[in-house]
Length: 130
Image (cartoon, rainbow, N blue to C red; front, top):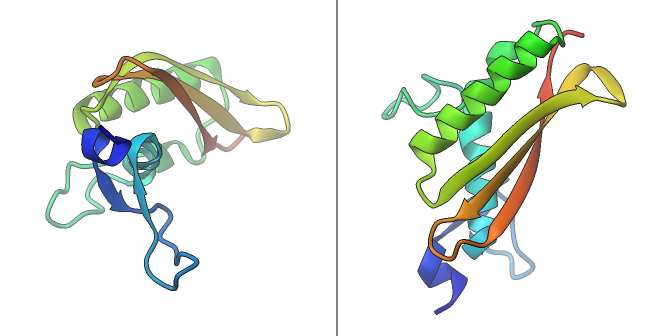
């Protein structure tokens, strides 16, 4: 069974044109990584027909880069992905200050693919105030 059959297939994210001039698609583990990005980069009430969808990480823009803020980001990421991405089981979320940008944090999300139990991880940058 291939990844597209097991995990699904969807339009690539970010949307792009493939080498053949058509819309690029993603499938398998790549589709899941892209779906995680979509969930976390979408603000609540941004989708008209599904206003509760999204991770709402832009809420933290202008928040101080403190342990408390980073803990709140971890909590929000965990809850959003548990709700909106059923193909994964979160094993950990860690949010640390970005060493190259005092006004940002880096979230590392480790998870297992539910269908195969394969371990994966993805990182997301979150802009803060500093």
